[in-house]
Amino acid sequence: MTAMAAGWLVLMVLGVPVAFALGAAVLVYMLLAGNTAMLFNIPGRIVGGLYSFPLLAVPFFILAGNLMNKSGVTQRLVAFADTLVGFLPGGLGQVAVVSNIVMSGMSGSGLADASATGSVLIPAMRSKGFSPPFAAAIIGAAATMGPLIPPSIPAVVYGVLAEASIGALFIGGVIPGLIVGGSLMLLVAYLSRTRDIPRRARPTLGELGHATVAAIPALLLPVIILGGILGGVFTPTEAAVVASAYAVLLGFVTRSLGLSDLADVFRETALTSSVILLIVGAASLFAWVLTLNQVPQQLLALLLGFTTDANMTMLLLVLFMLFMGFFLDMMAVLIVSMPLINPIIAAVGIDPVHFGVVFALGIMIGTITPPFGLILFLLSQMTGESIGRLARELAPFYVV
Image (cartoon, rainbow, N blue to C red):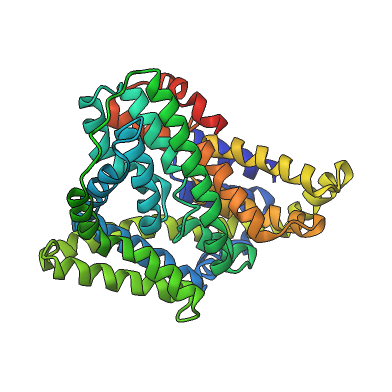
């Protein structure tokens, strides 16, 4: 087991893709253990990890987000947010936060939100006097709301692994996500005042009305998803299909999406979905080996020997999530760690929905924290700034 864990970590540090690192680590373990008969179980375990109806929501939510981006929805949402809050202290910084809140309701991925809003807003923020590191820090911090506000792709996977209600996870993430968003807006206002950041003039009612009308079709998507789930009209998986159908219809009606665009959208969706689902399958294999060796039970006994208090256990798990988020994507942490964490939260009486929300935020903070935060790397590539400089600008946001 030590060789398997060490092999996986070494491969991750070397930059090997997560799914291949997991599979190779399991293969090394089986060969060293001399149990070659287990090799025949590998295909079945990988496929079995994907045999889940709720996981169908993942590619469809990704498809809906890609369709929205391809049809120019991001630009309309940014224009709406600019009209709505661009006159507040912080100007485009406030627009970045609100845009990410709305984008979270469509993509469900913090990395996708940072990429979509960052590509539009960072150049605009630089032209308005924002330093590139400060602009990137705002985008990165706002992107942490991605897995909190529904529809959330990590919430779907977490619900499958923890056997928790995906609908409850969607609903449970709304208020924390809005609280985080409000806190970020206050911090952006404060920091912008000390940097003399300009803001736009207060919009007229006509400007506000025009921007709102242009954004309403996109704003309806999260309403349809949440309303349908809360009203019992469809399940979260069916909601993902409805969201994709709505996005296609919206693109054709507004003539911002053509048949030629669909091929690119489907290709991008297939690639992204394949990466996520391949990680799910490989991690299921990894978790199976951990379970065979009773690692979850050993970890549970070790933790319960230290504390049985739910609050202390939650604190320890949050620290663990932050640490793992430094090195791995949220999906990888989620899939690898949940077989270990499930027995722990059940033993100390932590509600799985509550833990799921805390889990999502903890991991997302890790993605904007050096040395290996994925969103931090993305922002570094987009701005050309060093990881260290971006981390210094992000320091106040870590507290929030």
